[in-house]
Length: 520
Image 1 (tube, rainbow, N blue to C red):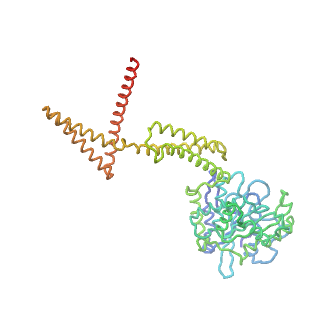
Image 2 (cartoon, rainbow, N blue to C red; image 1 turned 135 degrees about the horizontal axis):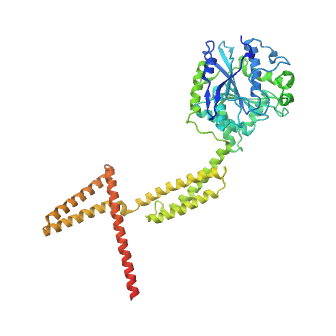
């Protein structure tokens, strides 16, 4: 039997410089595919939460209990050890800088026999602390979500109280994990065990499980007068876990918190803390309290865990999941999107007044003037609204708004073109006029005996008539669309040239009339 001191925490999830994680597959295979355990159902106890809050320190006491219970078969109350015995196990130390990175599994799995006689293997998982100065929101979400997806019991390690921001972070991380699971049926995770460290109000709620459940019920209570956001958060947490538990842990003592030479000796730890350990740890890892890991209702074996890990990492390192945002980023985004929506309404209201569905056709130049006026007012409305996130953040949304308004103007322009009766019938009129003119020319040429001109004009009349019939057929059936579009473009040029000539003649006539009046 291996001595506990010869074990160590194995880093199975390794963070990289590009804020992506990789699996230590070689170590995982050695740990999970051992002949004596690969076909055993697994129990995974994980501890997650903010960095430098004693997670690794706590797990080392779990190791002491499990070594005595499952390796030494000693179920006595002296598993905590001798008063002067240093605490061995997961690497831990005091201080303010982060210590654990990625995910770690203890190198020595523990084999336990359940009350029904089934054998299971227990793994302890230590996790990188959240919200240190080197981790992004995605790093934190990935580690927390992955550990929650893998564990049968996730211990959420909190400091001093259950605060609203603790619940908000829990909502963010579990929702990220639920997205990765790609399932909405049932509750995706098993047991969430909140552990409130350094609880200072035993006169409100006593230390231990009983006080913890009272506090948890109060914090997660849903009341009619609560804001919808607070109600939604609580509904979300309740929908994610099959079980929700809480335990209130006293402070371990000043020596633990302030002495840099503290080695984990029991003599330096407060009696209240040691009593709480004796209650809390067996509550999770005594044989009668073990929870076997299940996914989709099926027990997970040790050899299966490697497959799940590989599958999950493909998702978290891929592009299928959205980038998780901080609460400020999410709020700023919603705030700016709201300003964009209001500005878009300003533009639409002004444009509908001049170019709406019931409005008559408008000259393109006038429509463009109205578009610029409405666009400028909409952009002014966006910029004048108070927004979160800073100017640089809002400028991106301003640029997107500008592009959206230009695209919307294109829709108004097309709708306005459709109202132009001459444009819609222009191709038919031009082709009809061409056919008629050619026919008249052919008739005149025949009367004058000009055979060559008669043949040419007749051919032109037939071609114009055929083009008109083909254009009408295309518009009615949708066939030969490209040919019909080409005819529209050519006749549009003719109409534009004709319209320009008429305008020049009218202008010349007006100038001539003005000159005659001046002479008179």
